[in-house]
Amino acid sequence: MVMTNIKATFACDIKTVWKIITSLEDYAWRSDISKIEIVKPHQQFIEYTKDLYPTIFTITVFEPYQRYEFKMENSRMIGYWTGLFNHKDGFTTINFTEDVTPKKTYMKPFVKGYLKKQQQTYIHDLKKVLETL
Image 1 (tube, helix red, strand yellow):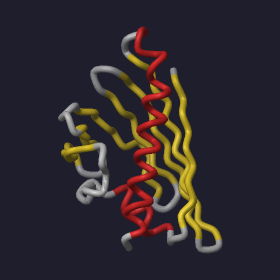
Image 2 (image 1 turned 45 degrees about the vertical axis):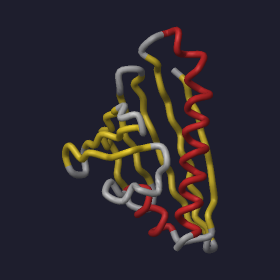
Image 3 (image 1 turned 60 degrees about the horizontal axis):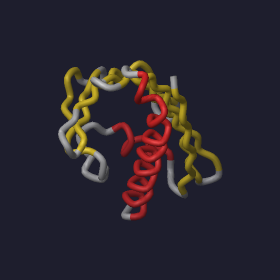
């Protein structure tokens, strides 16, 4: 099991941040994926990387403006993602934690670096889209 965490704060309202992050239809702002396929609305979706590598996500918690969680799985890993949201004095803070277990033990040394890079890309893309609003 490998755990990573990233936090970021944005000078905008929580409703805007929540809407962007939880939308499965408006994902063009994300530079790391090519498409999202909704399997069961509000329950399960598949994200495809730019190389069309699929990861299945099953939503387990959806508490608007507070908490968003899902299980994730692909042929290389299985894991859990938790997103916490907080708003104070005009600023929205997000706190994302990923807990991943690689399916092949030889991949374990590479997982943390890969997850950190993914999280940084996500935050970078999110900042970029929020700046356009």
